[in-house]
Length: 496
Image (cartoon, rainbow, N blue to C red):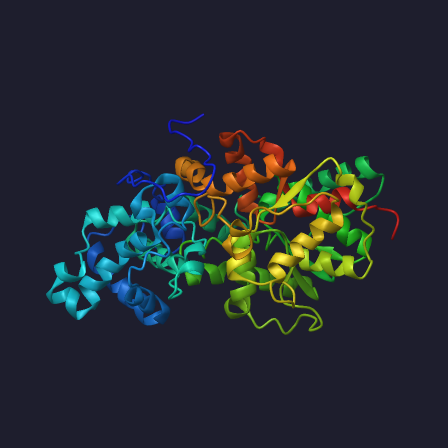
């Protein structure tokens, strides 16, 4: 299946033995000039890249004061060292969060601190050389920006912010990542990560309507570009074709149908994902977000609801108003934005959905908290809603639900291994090895409770698990959408 060895599942967590430079050669493909230039970056590495990189770092230090705090405040206490899934899976010490931070911190000290300028060896300061740049390119693309390390850092240092800054600097000198930058370019040009044009999207949705009719006998619509609809649903484009994502989209449609709420998708804003965050580019995040605002205005909707996507929800919840607001043209009675789980949970609480849990009795389900939802956002009005609401939706749809070990869920959840712009086959080794801690927790509940399915509310998590589960001898179709469970349980024709 691959030319690397899948890590063995361990009986209990232990701090790995160190394997220096174990993943030093792992890097994603470099973006082609057209991918770079489409986003406003140099097409290839600049001749004076060193000067541009230091200038960019200085700009970011002025712009983001937290970045300077993160680079100044680490005391090397070691609390983060064994918290990163990539360190656990690869055993490479440079994948310890503190060591990854030091790749940037050492250059920061050399050019922006008194001690680093005059006594570099005393403070671990380094010149920015091509060797250092290559090291950045490798190891800052072995960070999924999951922020688990920040939960355990007594100073709250956020390695994700440092990784984003490093990637932003590399883009500025002409060394961008192909996977992310090519995708962002497609969103700017067509509206979604896949480059799926409107007619193809329409054809897909009509096919899904036929499938639902065949299965249920009910005409459930998946509307596209309907002016005057109440709700604009913005969902990851993976929901239009991938498994199990598409089953989640069918679930959303059934929920809207039974609740009797008019809704629509948009060809112009046909992507919830915002890879601008992965590369640390505020301007690209803003351009992607503005498409959602324009679609909402053009269609005259009253509400915006986001489908199941982890980092999309983080961008929407934390930054949408700053990036593309104000959204004062929407109905003020509803949150802006609202998560599809929050929407469905509210309908369940009000008795607006008729769910038969026994429809999922062939499953024993556990839930994977997605990093960007768990550690970088909230959901609903209750504290911890991002943990409670998805689980309540699952419990309303299934009779058999169990959680994984407490130190692997909620804000301590482990990344799936493919987040942060790493969901590309050229990084398959790091993806498989980074999934190790989650696979271990999954194996425990499989053996103890007979868990058969893993539910998630993130498009990247679903794609990642569908790929890596077989490496650990789990079935590929073990991963399901939360709204796939709702879709199975909902009793169409009983409430309309």
